[in-house]
Image (cartoon, rainbow over all chains, first blue to last red; front, side):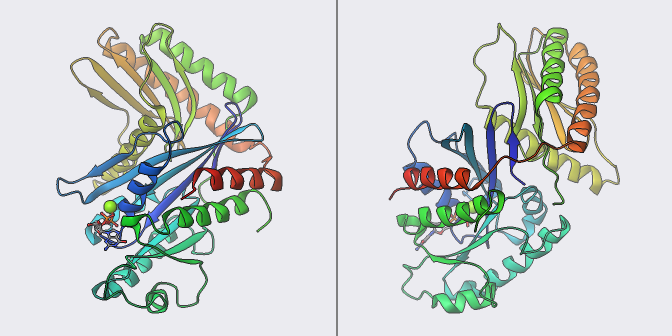
Length: 196
Length: 163
Ligand SMILES: Nc1nc2c(ncn2[C@@H]2O[C@H](COP(=O)(O)OP(=O)(O)O)[C@@H](O)[C@H]2O)c(=O)[nH]1
Ligand SMILES: [Mg+2]
């Protein structure tokens, strides 16, 4: 749940970018970092290996400004996608307010997408959460690949029941990156502040 | 929700800040923070003489993640937890201790602060803060977020995230 600090009049939300390795999670955060003006973002922290694979997480704090006297912040995290880093992935889900699941459109990654979603469900379950308890948005990334699978095919393996909003993206070009973040933020806000 | 939101407000917040202030005085540390396990700052205090602190968001996130990893390690080794943690460089040091189940105390100190004092008073402060956090958790304030808040936040997001 969001952290509300009444004394400092702050409201903080935690958004986690989940998904298989190399699907473009870090690329999403880098794009956001590069486009958000100074003063609205903090430092981006990347705990990565020498070859730029996420080891623990990336972190980017965004300050969207003051709403009704409350400074409102979004803390964005990515998880390491590689299968063997599950212990770290689990830790990062703690206290999550919203999730962006970044799926890969590459034909060879269909199964990795499905497995990552299953893994996410299992890790949420360890906190007593189901997929219904957390707002989730699916981003189908790498739409620019010449052999990109149809969106419906990707969706069919990660969200067969069609429960979550789906957005297409080319994260390297920034296409769909802001849209995805806005969508998940909307869902998160609707959860804590009525409506939806 | 499984992860209760620790919200410090009013009297418990004031008392937490007092504990942090006192700990700064007793230890000679530069900065004292109470953060939640997710890495958000709940309360913080800086010594009057201290230079500008590093970004607190970043500090809190890294400390909380580190603590989470350390706790996972303890479990792996069959321990319920590893207690306080001290990191020391040539000039700067970091003391982290559990303030109950849901919060962490962080002290940032330099070479002028004796480590023995940091540890002694850090431990006491962590215990006092744990009690305050427990109390705050037992009496959560009402959320004052409404549709108007939501619409305001959405408008700001639209503004900020413009292609
Ligand atoms: N073609 C293409 N490549 C992408 C896209 N997004 C990310 N990549 C590339 O995929 C690789 C892995 O991206 P990264 O963000 O590190 O993946 P992560 O493991 O999910 O964090 C990098 O080489 C990116 O440049 C995209 O939309 N299209
Ligand atoms: Mg990454």
